[in-house]
Image 1 (cartoon, rainbow, N blue to C red):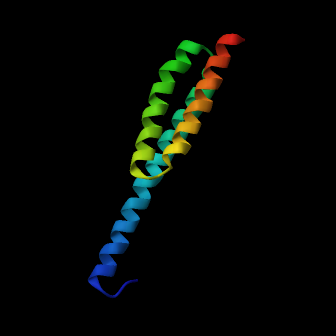
Image 2: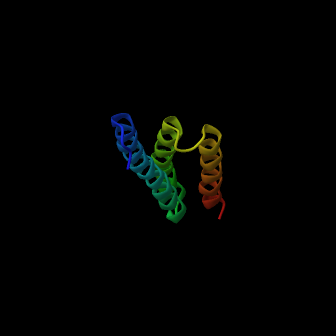
Image 3: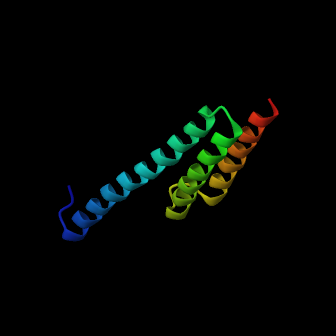
Length: 86
C-alpha cells in the first residue's frame, strides 16, 4: 500500500484503468465471437459493424494497437465473405 497521497492516487487510477481496459477487451472479443457464430452473410455483416466499432474503440484507447485491430477486422471480413461462397 502506498504511503504518499500521490502514490495512493496512482493506485486508484491504475485500478480504474485496468477495469476499463478489461471491459473494452471483453467487448471486442465478444463481438468477434458473435460474428464467427453467424451463419449467413447478411447476419455476419450486421455483426461486423458492431465488432468494428468495438475494435476501433479498443485501438483508440490503447487496449490494442491500431494494426492489431485492422488485422482482426480484415480476417473477420474474410471469414464473413467466405460464408457466401459456401
